[in-house]
Length: 158
Image 1 (cartoon, one colour):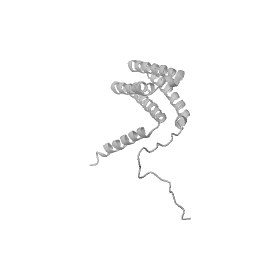
Image 2: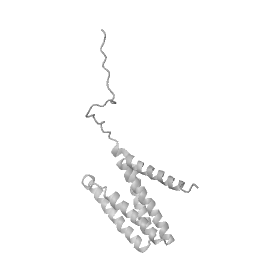
Image 3: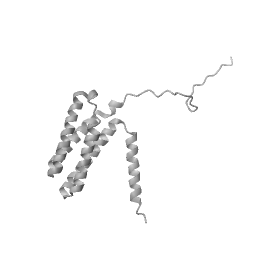
Image 4: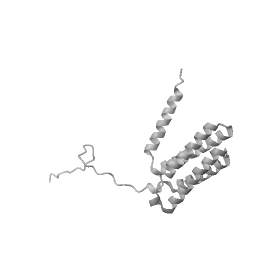
């Protein structure tokens, strides 16, 4: 009778996630990428130990996609200088290690990548939103806005 409540709950969870992504700062989005990669890594370990080859492969592929198309692709090597280049090399290393772990069913490699990602996430969280705290001035209206606040101009009856 109420079999679709699980489906409804999933829809609300999806809306919550999408709203969180849209409303997040670039800093928070990177933290979310780290979180997603770490969760998928743990799932890959569980599937690897259970012998669930397809699920393991899907979980590892998800981590690789997050690292390559999320974390690595978001690096600005011009503005980031040597740190960005070092992170790029580290993300490339992680991708190679993840592929090897998938081929050899080696949970130790997954644990290694998990440790690297967890350390990077911790460093990123320590930075905080301080890089995004410079407030931009509010946009100036370009046309008449009837709802915009106006200053009152009173004439003295003198």
